[in-house]
Image 1: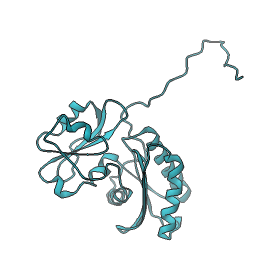
Image 2 (image 1 turned 120 degrees about the vertical axis):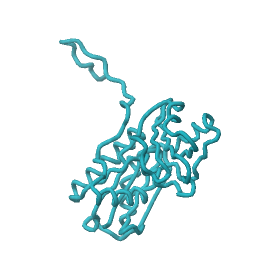
Image 3 (image 1 turned 90 degrees about the vertical axis):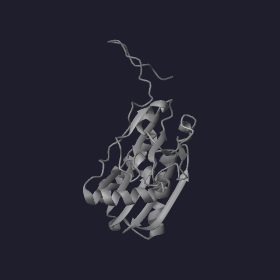
Image 4 (image 1 turned 180 degrees about the vertical axis):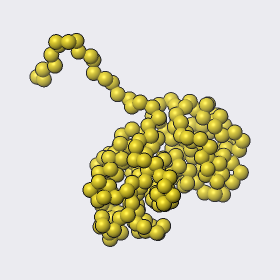
Length: 228
């Protein structure tokens, strides 16, 4: 099976092509904005580097959140559009799960892993896993002090907002794993989840409403403002 996978659900953008677990091409870039301009050229670059065309791709893997609203939307829109055009299935992978699988087994041994993703607000997006990477619950958005209740005992922290919890749990260990999802890991998870029928649907996991301001309600008969 040949898999194209990509992620832009946090402050980065990455894409990879794997065939039977072997990495054929991978690109990654940390970025706080600009994923909409970067993702498609990055996908084209990894396909070109792998020497593959769309007929040779079997599956698309994509992260579905939680993370940044814009990044999640960009990734899912790309996955849906490409899947529709190339008649391919999509395997959705949770952002927290992708991050958890980037943490080395040696670090996880004897500890509960808490993946912590920046929400751009005072709260955090978190999900706890045991040392075998079995989820201890679904991802959730909550205050930092509440997040620690998800992971009693020896604690390992990972993710781009993990450092925010260190002050609250000085005994916690900060993982050396990358703080953003790796498209190679997303691809491997997509292969396993698709084969088992346990992949997430290509739908966003936002956990809270987007930060938007709705236009003021117009009274009946009130005309639309004129552009000048």
